[in-house]
Each structure stands twice: as C-alpha cells, then as structure tokens.
Picture 1: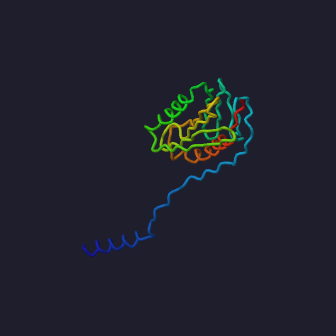
Picture 2: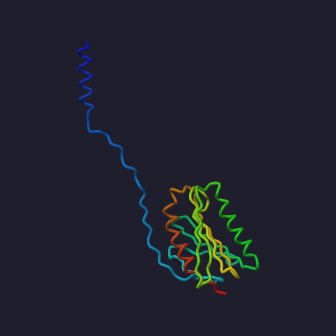
Picture 3: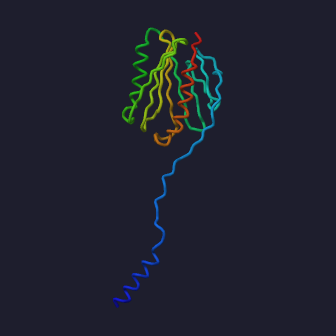
Length: 184
C-alpha cells in the first residue's frame, strides 16, 4: 500500500510540474487626449482669454461662464465679481472655498501667478485626493475685476481615475491665466 501511495504521489508531482506561474504586471491606463487649439473667448465679458477648441462655452448670468468638457464629463466654472473696495473679502472668500475641500484632500498646493504687464495677479490651487474639485484659482487686477474658477467632474471623486483628465485640463487653465486680459 505504501508503494502505491508513493507511486501516486510521484505521478501527481510529475504531472503538476509546469512552468512557474508569474504574476501579471500591473496594467496602466493609457489615455491619449488630442492636443488643443486655442482661440479667443467668443462671448462678450469684462475679460477675455484663449479657450480650447475641445471645450464648449455656456454663458451664465452676471458675466459668469461655464467651460464644459463633455468627453471628460468636466467643467471649469468661472465666476466674475467687480472689485468695489472689497478685494480683501473676495480673496478671503475664495480661499475659504478652496480650503473647504481640506476634509477630503490629501494636499492643497498653492501657486502664485503674476503678469504685471496685463495687470493679472492670482493663485492656482492644486487639490490632491478625493475632493470635489481638483483645481481652483482666482485672478484679479486688484482694482476693478475678480475671477474665481473651479474645476469639477460630473462623477464621484476618485483622484486616481481623474488624474489624467486633471492634468489635461490644467494646461487649459494655465493658458486661460496666461492669456487673460481685462476689457475695462
């Protein structure tokens, strides 16, 4: 009986010996976004900037604007407010809206922006983690105009999933800030 058990064990071992099974490498999502062409903002506002041809504009009241990215299910919401001796309050309100996301954010990284020749001064905030907005910014000329912008996705926030789209839209936001001109 021992001999039969030994032969069966050897037989099973010989049949089960195949090439080693190796774990499969992690798959990485490869998203390729078409490069954007930029043109002047086609709606009349107290400001102008270059906007991507991959975006759609939706006019809002009070000189506000929604820049929609239908394929990415995202939008940049632009709010405009005139400065009427209330610049400090506008800046505080803008920063409060940014840091409201601190509960879900892993990190909030501010970057200042300055273009003295066009009188454009502002800050861009990159928000990492599963916050509702991944990028927020504000821009002002410090005397008459103030713009606040926020990037939103129409999905449940999952930072890892939206990161490629955030990087793509961030280029458009930077182009917006770099080409902004005040009309008044």
